[in-house]
Length: 218
Image (cartoon, rainbow, N blue to C red):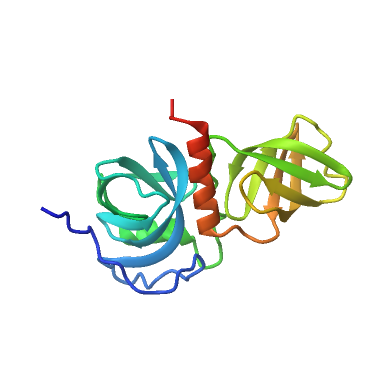
């Protein structure tokens, strides 16, 4: 018997900056189009949550996890909800939560208050390297974590200094070069904000490619 999808896709624009829906009564199904973090047995990646209910969610991922896979969804840093994948088609899947959740509570976690916006979720790639061009200096660095809006790197060549120019060029292996701003430096590590956010598709495919390059998870 063909597995029926957990929920029906709702039409709407594919954006991460939509305002929170009306929460005066708890909806059975809520359209999000929100980037979330997906934790799987293969590591961390991102997904685009298309809609969500008290019992589960539907999302895009590259590739979609297999039916029966145990995953966890984060809509804000450090708050994950365990789920089981119940159907998967190409790059889309539906998952059922291990325990029901309040939809307004999940929306509040995802969007925060009207006057506060959560920062983009950071993902730790299994492997990732970048070349950082800072003034006249060039150095290789390992990627500690990355999001659509920036990344943290660690460079053994500790030329990075908050006292020098703050504009940097980031050449991430497997992605197009981009420009950024050096936000902080500490003991060889540095935080960099992208001038232009990475697209969901670019980052999702890059995370998948780096996971394949790293080989099977331990």
